[in-house]
Length: 144
Image (tube, rainbow, N blue to C red; front, side, top):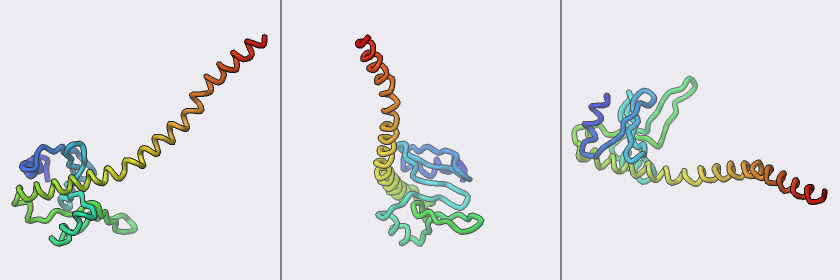
């Protein structure tokens, strides 16, 4: 799949950003990646709400092979082949995939905040040292 084909494919969905990723492209809308176009096919983001829809179509989750095993990525599922000929229905599936990606992003945010708070807390003592030194200098200056 090339970039022009993907732009045409998502025409009914709306504007998408297509960036090179791995052996293909990452497809995003509103800053959220919701699809992968790889050599092996087009995969949409899925979650517990949308996976049954993919299963009903006989789709499989994204898989790749390492030296030791086959890895299954259950958050991306192959788009049913029939949707390549129906851009209106494809846009409905794309909206569902975008919603799944947005829900996943919301679940990840609290973890990022905790890390940021821990980093900020770790930096505070070093920021206090100069102030503590200043206070000590004032204290000793008064005694002299």
